[in-house]
Length: 122
Image 1: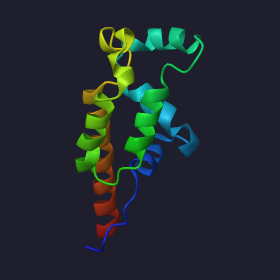
Image 2 (image 1 turned 120 degrees about the vertical axis):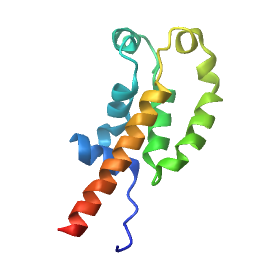
Image 3 (image 1 turned 180 degrees about the vertical axis):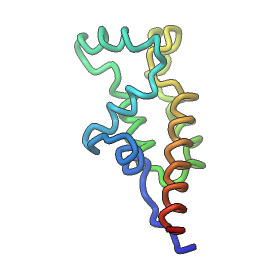
């Protein structure tokens, strides 16, 4: 099998989901929010400041990954972020769902490998 080109999670996610790269962080946050957080998300976006700035930063960091195995390092840093101590983020869970995000990352990289193998065989 020829060496695979290392592609970032951003590239793979955008390609698989039809998302322009410039919209990647917001699209990933949208996909990774728990369903019950979506209504509150809209309300929080009306407030001054960007409540989801830390989630967007986390999404950009995840977007640089070239291997799903490195996801745990990013999660550890995100968990330690001071913004995750705020009541809304902690108790109401109005933040990214790490289990949902983990499934998105794993599925995205897995689909990329399948696509690459099919292209190589053909």
